[in-house]
Length: 245
Ligand code: ASP
Ligand code: MG
Image 1: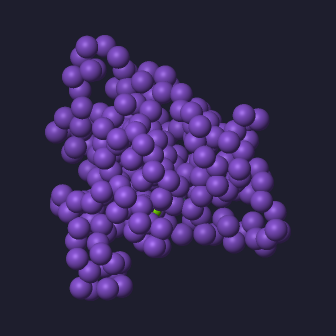
Image 2: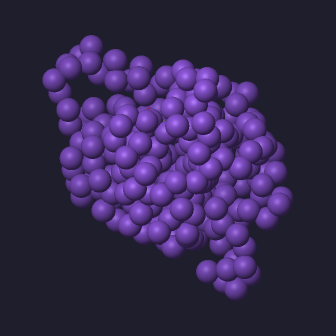
């Protein structure tokens, strides 16, 4: 990247399904991104599908054949993200910002071929760095990859966190932001347990333990990648101005 670009602060920002769950919310996300951009943070956006969409796709597939798992199934369940990244890119464009929606194969998020639970093996970062050089906001589909035979793969439910942390690692960043519908990581799900306590800081090991105990805050693989490549994961609310975890 050129010197000027080097001095710019780039941040990977991932938005979960509820954050992009309606047109109104997508517009709000676009506004938040632009506000942060005007405060000096140029985003690399990763988005999940609109909330409920992936479940609908899974149900459609199961109506045809609940036993089939393979490239067609992954293509099916990965399609929700294609919709959300296109809409979010349009919302940015409407506000006068250049944005490019990118599916995993366009970007080069290469995985193995373990469909429905594929692992990222390599990310080609040139496409991203080229866009950043041109001040174009990349809006990346979370949860998906492409295998050596050019099939679409998926990373496991909740896998868009992993896309975000892996992108941050591939770009050599030391942090990544995960925007969600809870303001932080809590000792229990605050939507179910009103007394749950907010945890301002925890280690990768503690977070992995929480994930393995069934906390759905982060995809466990994203925490593993964060630990391995030393990418701090910052979990915070999309619609409230709070520091988070
Ligand atoms: N849309 C996918 C899912 O519902 C991935 C994600 O949301 O992280 O599992
Ligand atoms: Mg999630």
